[in-house]
Length: 188
Image (tube, rainbow, N blue to C red; front, side, top):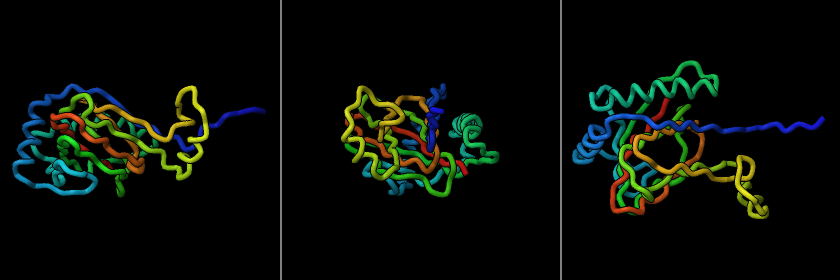
């Protein structure tokens, strides 16, 4: 009997939403003016403290997040989830986020509010410690789910990405003069 079994699969969920981005941009810019910020994985730029999830400006976004997390969590057979925290990000030229994961949560994500080409893709990293060493020795015709150690998703306005919180990821540097704005969040 010959059989190929996929083990240790890691899904991500990508969906283009249709939210009013102007309201969200103004909200993020106002947060930055209030200088209510922190440094966690960000190298430069602005990252807000956790937001009050009851703010009127983010209600439409939270409704969409909840709806899409309901779909994505079925992949993991998770029954109960709730939004744990939500924060805003701005990356200016040269700003990026270091490799990290989101502890104490199950599903994490990002929603892009303002992006430009080359404003910084999100890079997901295969966490098998020795995979890079072994993959360097293989000549690939093309990359696939079995021979890749990294996966990139290009930032795009109104794009929602959900992923398991344990999946390591980083944000590539913003190489444009325009700021890249997003919301990140965790569900527990």
